[in-house]
Length: 346
Ligand SMILES: Nc1ncnc2c1ncn2[C@@H]1O[C@H](COP(=O)(O)OP(=O)(O)OP(=O)(O)O)[C@@H](O)[C@H]1O
Ligand SMILES: [Mg+2]
Image (tube, rainbow, N blue to C red; front, side):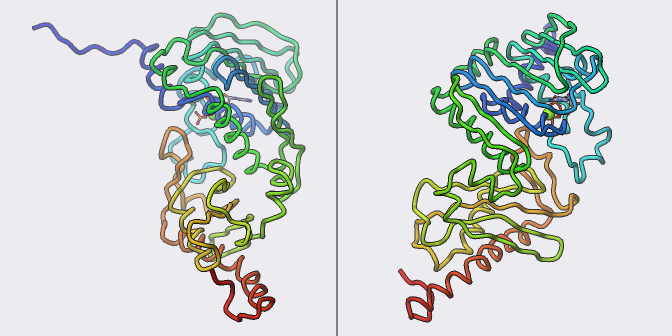
């Protein structure tokens, strides 16, 4: 019998690997914004058409790339952010794999324009389905613009899993919101189908950013959280118990400036509200955790949205305590004004 096993062509392997990094348009938006932030951008503009299926454009005023780097950046495992696996301990940049741009470029029509400080001309690179079509000089200011058209055009199986334009658009807004909350000092703009959806100037604090991003209705109903236990620090804002509702809440967690998802930590924070909100009410949370870099592992999942903690129980306990301490003064004040002496009861 002849052999049946063969090594996949690079282009096929790249498209399969891309499936892990790029699940939907919002993943592209997240990766491109993170690259812009890693490049030190102070202003990031995101434009999206048809929920990101037909067009995603992310422009930044960051450091840009010299021509050799611009050509290199779409190679798999090409990164300027780490050189050794030990660099992953306490990694300060959002990126570290050198996977995002090659993944995106292999499953879309991809264009990149960039110029770095000191370059006498910029570079324009056009890639189709992972194949470089052209590299040309271009006149532009320092920074980078990436355009991603017809996402998944050559991976029909992926395209089929896309949700409605409205659902994909919502996911894009969420991706922008999460990172905009993580980095209040950076200005963000999101334009969807030529309509401005987000336009927030550089802010001084998370509080100011919540106000400009989500409006005074959300910002006005929050209380501040400040908590420290040993090397663990938690700061941010949580919804006043009286404002909590069963639906429509927002829960954003950040660790060392990185948005992440963790239903256990959300639950731990909710446990801090025990007795203060009616069962079923889900308060909004904007909580930023700071821990020494060696206490976390961010290299858990290709989406980089999951984080592993060295001492998860400690972190869960801190979330619960941080919330309980923050709402305690309010509870006592309510108890005094209502004269029950026992806090609010339901
Ligand atoms: N907007 C940008 N401005 C300047 N340099 C950029 C920009 N985007 C990408 N680069 C450069 O291209 C490299 C490759 O980017 P890519 O996103 O593929 O990988 P990464 O960010 O290093 O890691 P990850 O795959 O985890 O995102 C980066 O390491 C960086 O040097
Ligand atoms: Mg990256």
